[in-house]
Image 1 (spheres, rainbow, N blue to C red):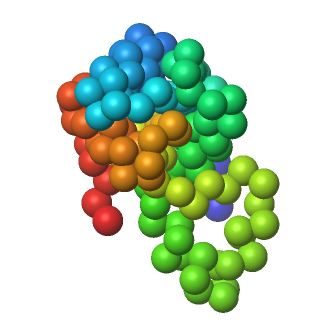
Image 2: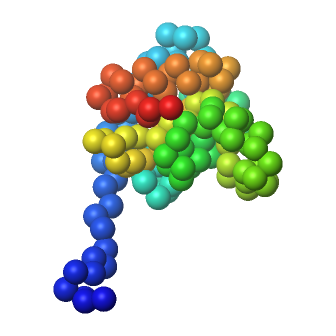
Length: 148
């Protein structure tokens, strides 16, 4: 193989700090309208925390759950609510033992032009409320919804 044609790296796109903070604010706006206090986590494409906030009345466990939802969404480029179906497959089920895998609705990959630039995780409402808040916040800021 010639080193002239060998690509040795690829650019890694990441959500900006400003966009991460804007997502946190957008989620809190939707969560307030839906009537629940939320913990909101945004990670970069590698699953590292970029922005986080927990509403005063959100239970303390929501913090960890939101971070793990964002991590799961970024790690696999897929919403967390899809994992229940995946884990029903005996070939995939062993992943359920991973301590950070969160198979509960409310985590979404953050996509720009088909590339995952981060993960969004929300906890504090029902899984339907967490999902709705994520979808509305991502749409409001112009992020692509993942095709399922």
